[in-house]
Length: 385
Image (cartoon, rainbow, N blue to C red; front, side):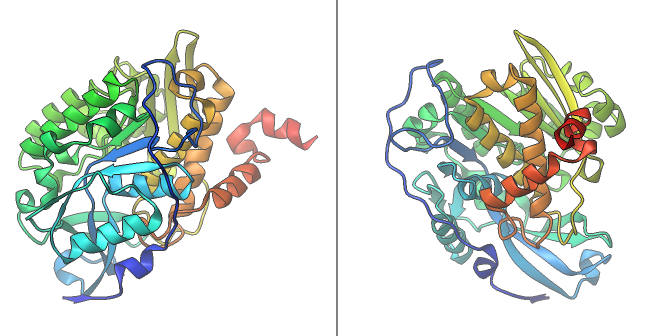
């Protein structure tokens, strides 16, 4: 097997500084993107790893002649994307005391992510082989070792940064760590700390069968964990696995998904090139809508959904928090369009982190979309007159 290129060179950089801030009392926060006094607004909890991306399209793993490593892992991707958008973000994870772990730590620090919350363990940092279809989509093809031997299975609940978690406004996580009993316990403990502190929890289901030994266990653990979520992002593949629901049904009626998630007032349904839909509920009513995909030249779709998540969280903070966003249907629609723009720009280059856009790039595409009828309907038509 040939491996090409430096993963850090491919990743780009962004830097920021931060200082500690006192935690606000539950329910008292008026949020902005940058907190008065600094501090981490968002904590991303979960795995960081290397995606070994096939250099040839349309081939199976055993047929691929060479691979290029790119740093990734959904929670790490969200952390770097948020930092590039200007949001102070911490990353809670377990990384190996190996060369790949050092490389990931250096990259996260270089970009500006708070890595003081990372646990270092004597286990290898995960690598995952990613095949590419002829149209650029990715297929997760397996690992270099047995899944349970990797460092991200060793996140320790006793070593969680309790003050940072209880002071965070949002926690973003996935479900891959639920496959490991130890990391599962830590993820649940982290979510509880955030919620007790008055923060909100966003869970991106991101089901990947290659991480699980048993699909039945995966379904049970994921559904149980979703009860802790205030915001759920769920893909077409997730819908079919958890609810035997087709994405067309979910896009046409996203509230049919929300009905299955009564503890989550906000549900985002994503279906790749088919677009995204949302159903959000508050004391002021129910708001639902659909946002088509931005048309861009696709180089690699890895990390696009994570960038979408980061874009949505950015708008959550800008709006002043989840409750405020849910009460404003115009701001809610703008948040999903902004998220879609962030995800689309990430598809234009290879690598989940390297391709992530700056705030200025996202804002430019977002503003351009305001003249497009397919995004804004009559509102866009009126703006032209």
